[in-house]
Image 1 (cartoon, rainbow, N blue to C red):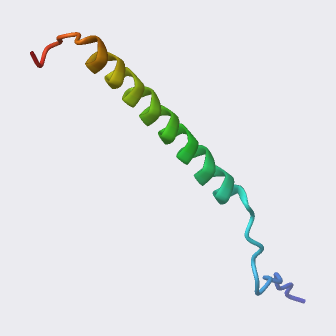
Image 2: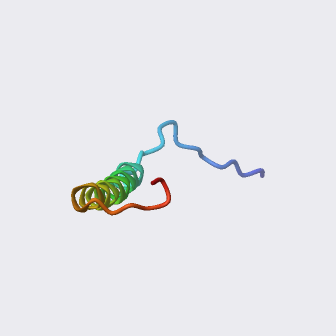
Length: 52
């Protein structure tokens, strides 16, 4: 007698994609914030770099 696999009609969606999106957003925001802070300090102190 053949056996058939039962496939559920609705697949539960886990919240791992939402937490992954949050982690990516936080990492990008932190990276951008650090870059802006360094740029602000460089401009305030008047440090001349390669772009001078």
